Amino acid sequence: MGTKIRVLPAEVAGKIAAGEVIERPASVVKELVENSLDAGSRAVTVEIEEGGKRRISVMDDGEGMTQSDALLALERHATSKIYDGGDLTAIRTLGFRGEALPSIAAVSRLSLITRTHDALSGTQVLAEGGELRGAEEVGSPPGTRVEVADLFYNLPARQKFLRGVQSELAHIIEVVTRMALVNNSVGFSLKHNQRVLFNLSATTEEQSRIRAILGKEIASRLVRVQGSHGFGEIRGWATVPTYCRGSSKGIYIYVNGRYIRDKLITHAVSEAYRGVIPARMYPVVILFISVPLAEVDVNCHPAKMEVRFRRGEEIHRLVSDALKDALTNPPEARPYEISEIREERASYSAPASFATGVEMMPAPTWRMVGQIKGTYLVVEGDEGVMIVDQHAAHERILYERVKDALHGGRVSQQPFLIPQPVEVTREEKELLIGYRAELARVGLELEEFGERAVAVQSIPSFLQGEDLHALLEALSEELAERGEGDTVEQCLDRICVLLACRGAIKANRRLQEEEVISLLAAWEEGTRPATCPHGRPLFVRWGWREFEKWFRRG
Image (cartoon, rainbow, N blue to C red; front, side):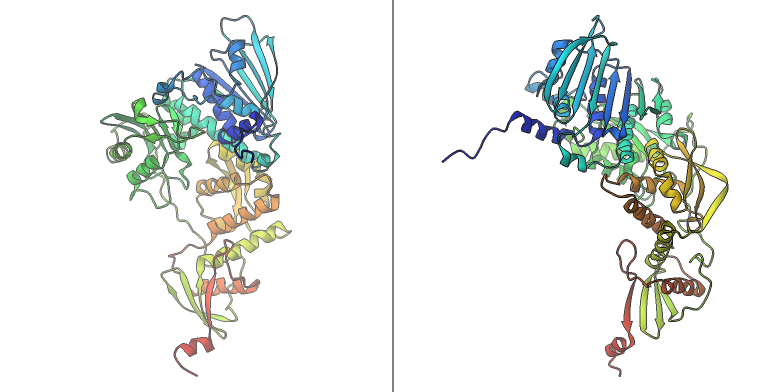
């Protein structure tokens, strides 16, 4: 009987290893930029085409490699950053696994051009699908340039899981942003399809780099965070409670200079802000945590995005206490003093007849009886008794109207006499401008406004009074989730759902009788759907016969 266990061919093993490290184009950018930083670079240029799916190029002015090192760099488990098992307990560099370049080469067509500063010429190494295709002497500037073309060309199944161009671009911008925030002494340039997205000069001023990346609005609301607790130290910045966002993307955590995602630290941030910002809202924080190298394991995740702390509870306490202290006792004076307070805007603002476009008329079937918890409408009619979720019902009505606008109808718009500029992140701007034509079809018209903002020219009328910054933030998150296989119509449908949800009357709002009548009339005008766009039920209904049966009448 033959053996069942066999050693995999090198080609297959390489693709499996690549699958652990290289998830998408942004993973390639992360690994290559980390290598550039480890090489002592003072300037890093990232150029991409088609969201990185066609081409990725990372060029630096670091120490470069000799020809023999360049060839070894493409060998599995080859690295200059660790030498023995003891080094694994004291990782000082960003890259160390010896997997990045071989893994990238296994799923792409790779070109590596490198030259040390004391050499007269450089070396070019070509690889395709993990196989070395050639090496030769070439002229090149000092440093290293790695070009990756046709990512996943030999793994069609993996290609299908990639998102759209704008989504993949947003992930790449996020990666470079994370690197740039912690390395302000390094200049970063990012280009997409020959267009410069940003060009950050090296600086000794940490606040200057933060302002250049996150914008003046966020920078003006930051307070300094500092603290120590036994073996660990923390420093950084955090927004005052009057500024918060709808997602946790603004939480940047670095441990010994390495960006990580960590539930323990994120929970500590949430604990520090508990009770001072609304539920399901998040601050912007940039935290740099320093601990002895032996106290943290950075070799527990293939992509090096997670770490394991030896004393997790003390790290949690360090983060939470430092943030609470910063929020409770902010410095008296600082150059980034808060210039204004952004108050929470009402999530819904509309005239009495909030069912826009529907005349005030008695609903032919239903009459208002009352309202429960400011959320559920109790109505009666010839057919029986019904309890309606007011938000879900209004959401369905708005959704149907916006959908009609996509098929030749028209959604009522609120134009701005002066376009409203809204500061957004770079990845949000690229997504919003990339889908500008689709957004215009549902009544939201935007235009570029400088490097880090968009100008809102008009919005659907039912969004009048909506916080534009929160709206665009939520829209960009939705757009980022568009997959490569999603059609434009599928993407637009999700936009319609989001706009309807944002514009619909919220729970815990008392309605006047005429508002209820208008809402029910609009509902009955249509097909009387039973669910909201998210699939939740709009109402519970009991016929009179069933109702009377409960009380043993009739």
